[in-house]
Image (tube, rainbow, N blue to C red; front, top):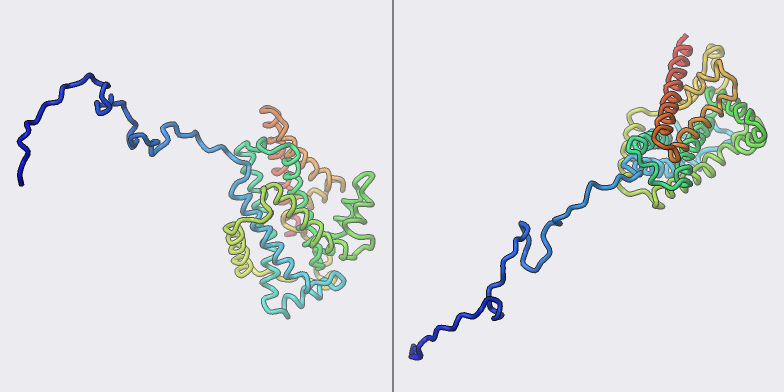
Length: 332
């Protein structure tokens, strides 16, 4: 190919910066940073994630609540408060997989109680109770006695010998509350002694709706996440299949058990043991003291908070001691 014979002229060197093609001064760059682009990594990473009051146990508790509500809705058409024990016997032995459905409902309720208590311990250990507003914190604390009341209602609806013995004790405790005790007993437990209609209504309706509304308000979501529901369902189903629940004996059916100490629900054995020697007012003063201890933690400073934590620990230690004492008395 023909080449040009024109000589190559050397361009006169200009001052640095006078020509747009002049070399730009180099500036140090962070590793991984591109030219005229933001760095691949934030050179000033944020600090540790801020602790939130809601944790894994809180989400799991919402999942247990969903499983409990769904299984309870499935059990409702087969239960009659007028013939409670007969309907449970038909459900247990006559309906296919009825025993499994009943155990699924019970174990999901127990899982809800355990997960709620664990979530409360998680919040107190992380010191995140102040991240909730004062009304939200008190509503969350109120979830614990409301849940125990719902579980106690389910225990009484069994209508066996233990349930029949627990119902008068529950009524006597509520009636001992000054000023509002008698009316509260008629409202929650019904006017007729032995009638389970009011208890069934509050167990399936009032308590369940309040639990769902307060839990959804606490978690800022109307429905639980899918993972929590699946995990809670698997745990409840595994326990229902491995440890099925047996029906209790009818009240007065066994003369040999007439002088035997009948035990209430496992989560209230400490309260039952305290009622052996202490006045009946301890049945509502003890839970009220626990609710106040937990509720005031949100407002207390460091030293007062430590005292409230110590009082709460002493409360649970006393509950455990009364539980052990009652179990020893039942073995005699």
